[in-house]
Length: 403
Ligand SMILES: Cc1ncc(COP(=O)(O)O)c(C=O)c1O
Image 1 (tube, helix red, strand yellow):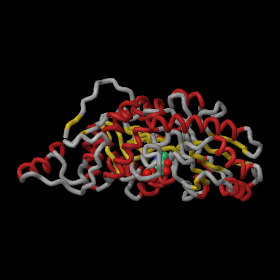
Image 2 (spheres, protein in one colour):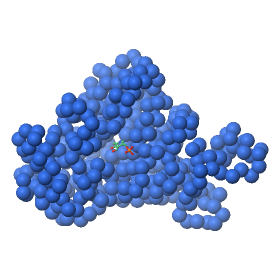
Image 3 (cartoon, helix red, strand yellow):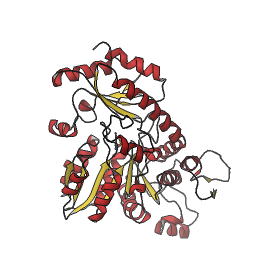
Image 4 (cartoon, helix red, strand yellow):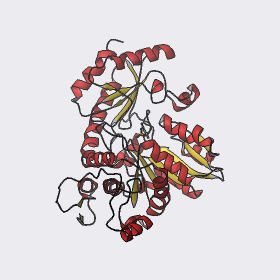
């Protein structure tokens, strides 16, 4: 294999298509996909050296694969971190962080309005291993600081949140975490490195559900953890390789090709989301729109500062209605009336997706948790894709105008 050496100081858009391109003697232009479970060793001495030190060469795809390594290197370059490790899913990336950064008796502070499975994993599931957690209001840095205990080892934030697009001030949370000797982890699945690079604001670890925007075309599941070599490669990577949380090479290849068009997609989808959000805000059957790109969003200024001047591709809105029953009926009506949008809980796709979070992505939360997170029965979440905006507006009007 030959490795093309790149000049220093390249921009993220260039790194997205040029970083990590080992080339075999065939000279392929597109990155090769190494779909193999193991690697043949030329002789016993080489095998022994490679098994003793994975840097020497590949042996078995659970412990290392060239395609997965290229995806990791490219994503790390885009996030501005020393390294990244790829996992089977976004949830296994979060599980990996929890199982390596925490032990029984430790405590996590996390936002109370994150993706449902993340809340469940860091709350209920980790409690069985003696790890305590406190969930605090996402936007209130004082509440995060007040929740810190002597045994707090990790602050976990998702910004913007799923589904209400609440932000947190990454710099403020990093200062709080570091003041107490804790790590700040940021789930960057919604923003992607195109909108924000959390380590530039002081975060220690970035996690991804690459299933979302990194792939961007709804084909595969993958996750990643990005950070320093000492922590992410040496500590977390060691656990990942033993625990078998690794990404499949086909998935890593697909996500790596997704990275090449990430900036174009995210910028176009974000621009469409802003137009759609502003349009929804004026519709009489819409009670409230949640979108960081709108001036009406309580954290608009922070979003513009922290997210490269963009609001992202995901927005949510409440339909009008009285009481939980009618609100749910109205939200179902708007969603079920669409003919273009896909009714699915995934997001970040070039195809627009629409979903009712209280009964799907956040359906396993208790009503109390949903209320604390501000998720009402009339809520609809849209991840805006690449369709023509007039078609998306017409699709939403089918249900909104007949409410
Ligand atoms: C913000 C966020 N983080 C993590 C995940 C989990 O990712 P995966 O489904 O790839 O396990 C999701 C899934 O929707 C998500 O929205």
